[in-house]
Length: 229
Image (tube, rainbow, N blue to C red):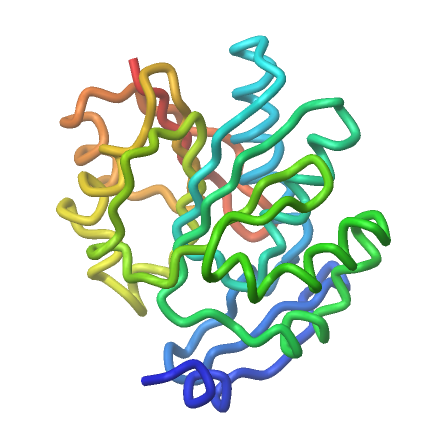
């Protein structure tokens, strides 16, 4: 399936907090929580992941890996957070079926970040699918790859695991997929995801990480954060 074919099955929808996301009819799920795309992204990934790491480590830069780049909302909000807090971010997204620039432009996410960040993101998005690009204080690369086929020599301070839910894509939540993902996490690094299940906790604990239950975003009681020790 090429990008054009995949995008034929996508439509813009509005979530409970007024922010927009994209519904994928092939998968049967939204790219973000129906309870609030913006709230989920800020709570689970920016605050519980990136901000938690920067405050815990005392660093002013973070290398972030996102499994499921999707609309780019997590990147935009993370880069904006770093810009506000005088930090820098090197961001790698994994996305098997990248969205078109036109569809991303229709999300309305420009209202959540600075005009300069939004414009630079749209102008450089397609280039980021081929090579690292600079977007204000951020460096972005989007690897057009499945998770299973993704490889890199880089290690990351924070991993955002934002795959579609296990009921729709169980292979993304298998022990093998989680183990493959966590090999890219630095010692002391943080792994965050919106979901928390017994199997996921057992898998991550077996890999030697410390698992924490944290309050979830709207619509979910809990989320999972794990720390590489």
